[in-house]
Amino acid sequence: MRYLVPVLVLLGLIVLLGVGLKNDPREVPSPLIGKPAPTFNLKLLGEEGSYTNADLKGRPVLVNFFASWCEGCQVEHPVLLKLAKEFNVEIIGMDYKDAPADATRWLARHGSPYRKVILDEQGNAGLDWGVYGVPETFVLNADGVIIYKHIGPMTEAAWREKIAPLMAGVKP
Amino acid sequence: MRMLLFIFMMLPAIAMAMNPADTAGMDAAQEARYRVLIQELRCLVCQNQNIADSDAPLAEDLRSQVRRQILAGESNAQITEYLTQRYGDFVLYNPPFKAITLLLWLGPVVLVLLALGMAYLFTRRSRKASPGSTELDAEKLRKLLDESK
Image (cartoon, rainbow over all chains, first blue to last red; front, side, top):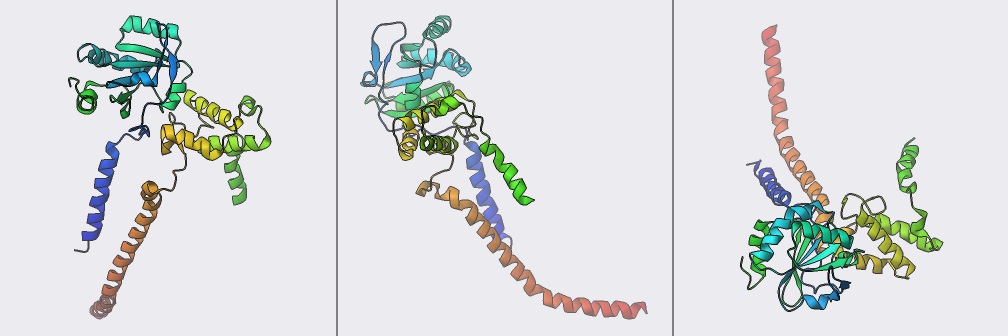
């Protein structure tokens, strides 16, 4: 009986530790969830004209920050290609702190899942979107509001379990 | 002796190898603010470092941002607000004292008090039991001595 209180406290701590250890301490939660996409007006890769945050409205989209120098982006690339080709997901690419020529070459080599590729050469859009390491993928609803952020390479599991349910009208 | 040790431990904070370009064009007050701010902001890539110490490209970008805003006349509060809007409270090296971080700040104190409280309760119970056992030991001791004679 005299051990009841310490045992209960110990069990409580073990539960807390168990929950805490499941979280990845390196993942920084985004304060942009629930907010409209940050304002930007940038040039496109491989075509004339520019693209702004207003162009992101009207349908659910994924905004994927990537770069030709990024290894994780290579890892997730097949998944993005599958999402775009098989599930018809609209993915807008944000080419982050990258030389346009390098991006063109990289996409020619690996294929492009992107409907459009926006050039964020200085990383200013990255700063406004709270990007701290590519790849990072933002899920936007039809009103252009950020509803989810996926940190790190995209996986099919993450798509199936977390993202597809958020994109109404898209096949899971 | 302890003072010397303390001073040695503080030296790294003063001896920051700073690129003079970082503070070019700033007056003394701005420079002082810049140095303090970059020590209070976390590098999101090397998350155990502030942006003053980190070599990560993002740290460089954030330092530039701080520099640009100081020169543009933004206040410290405005600069930290700008960054927490984009990266959240985690970008502040010292977590703010808000309702949500109350557990973070007070948790250790609460746990220590809990432990001390339990320790006190346990020693009180064992103290109650001991007076009887001392008497018993004295009796046993006398018997043993008598038998050995």
